[in-house]
Length: 334
Image (cartoon, rainbow, N blue to C red; front, side, top):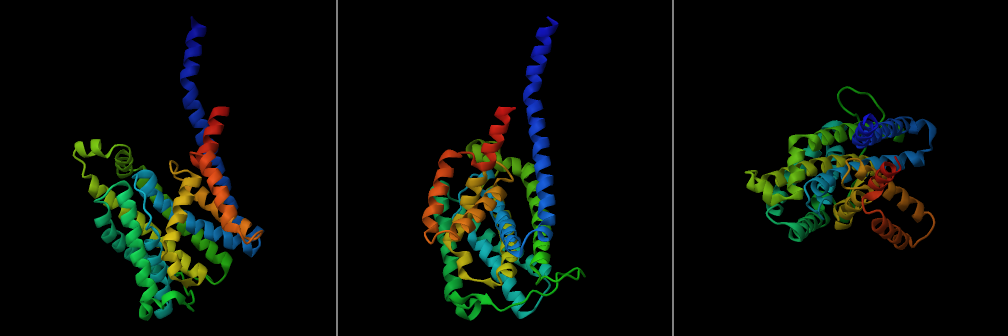
């Protein structure tokens, strides 16, 4: 009898024990990754610093998209509009006024928030494919404005020739140094990711998940589903604007390509590759996407064909994304 009770207790404690082990493993991997990211400029050439900076910025972009897609269940094909408008805002302010970078980033977030609020007001009225197509239409309209309004945006040439001065808040750093700018991006992305994580874990994030699973039942409980979708869309646009604001000083240019629909496809691919059901999935997907693109372009001119084949293979055989598949595999082995 005692052995039976002990067996039952061990069986009931098994899943929680595995969950605790996975949590400890995730924390350990996260701390190790953070240490590697911090010391990267001191142990790696400039090329890898550039790659890591791009991964961090695009990871934040993908994480902002995941708030719409993974948490709220809305597929947007116009997310690059907020990314690009944030980039243009920072480039214009640096070129015309040489403002501190942090102040420029604040303006980029505000501009992207307003644009997301306006576009989202119309888009959240529709569902599923109609929502996706309307976001694509608005995204292409923003791209067309930036491409044709030469007196303001300089057309297809974009805005270039600006220099990054001070960071702000009395911090004296040389932002022109790739290693210094990488650390600035790392700190800002970590803070933004922490804030986004708190939003996803809050009651607001729980309601978004409920809307994704069953919007009719949530509406029946008295929740204004449209208002929550609009709030999710607006918050995601704000974080995308921050990512775009970081991209402009990194590329030293803000061009219409950052607003194009093909740019909107990148966070979609990154989120699916990494795993939309996990908060860190988009960051993993961003790293995978950038590394694959860099590696393939260095080997062949037909990089789009090779990259497309690899991405199709991963989408077919890694249904939960790379992060989700690895975690499932570890849980099964334990």
